[in-house]
Length: 423
Image 1 (cartoon, rainbow, N blue to C red):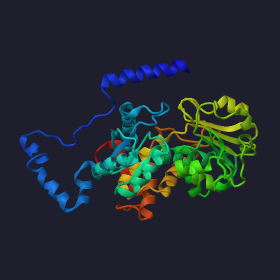
Image 2: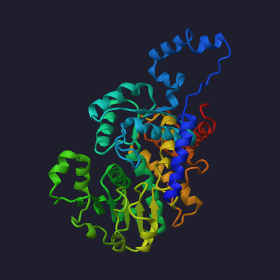
Image 3: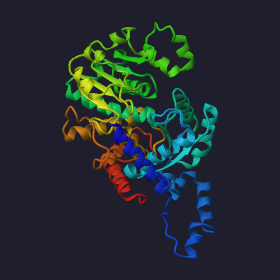
């Protein structure tokens, strides 16, 4: 495996150097004469600016704003690398932009910001957001990411999304929906252990609650053990990470305090932690037909073979070279396509659940198996279906400026994804 990954490293360096990055900007209007130039720039362009002054919403009609989002990061938690800083985050953000264009037809502009101060970071994003159709936050450390997401939702007028929270939670929910169908158990009453109390699992906990899961049956563990009301560091958590404290307050209704005991008769484990952090002995304590999502990248919390040997029935990882990859790229291109097409005012839990259910149904139609609970990235029309499901939900909930049904939004999304800029 190490040799294979080394080859990918070499290829990544070669391609990035050869092409000078992974994205570029191309014009949508052909300029064949000075008359054309006078229409697309001065003096003709002044008429467009004046129209937008008179009606700011017309910016969605006359500029690329209708199809453009900004990918914002400070590089404090880049992939599995950690705090690499904003400059080193740029190739990763370019990759995200590429996925947006390929699978969602969305123009996604990477903008790393050199700031670790929540107020300063929020001020910068607020100042530039006026020209975007939406904001995608990426690779930002916890709990900073919770803070800036909340601040931006309160301050800016376009939808804000944090992929490491909401995207990861959404695709995990899709996987859990199908995994629980296969094992013939009720997800909403299941005992679930979340290994890791960072952005992904805190967001997943909140999303599961909105989905109707009894979160009192969920135990969330960090490096010091299960979150519970008898923790010695409870006051510290309350001050340093109120989002984690809110999870502590609502989870673990039996008050489990020991790590090993957390896994007794558990139906599922979801790991967003670090490599090697799930022990085979824990899986042996779980209920029959147990589900283990070991999603740390690049090294899972437990390798699939070891998890199955310990008794796991369904296993997922965050890796593409194993079955059941939990990949938030299944969510964000289609979801933001739907957000832009419906001109949604915000991204709420209902829209994420709509995306998760659409993804789950696509896999179910193809036939669920222990090693197939989620569709692949390139499945035909996957992202158009996600887009239409999200847009339809936004429309029905009154959260959008453009109204329509599934068929309307699906046709529009499919056309944009297949033809690029053309509407």
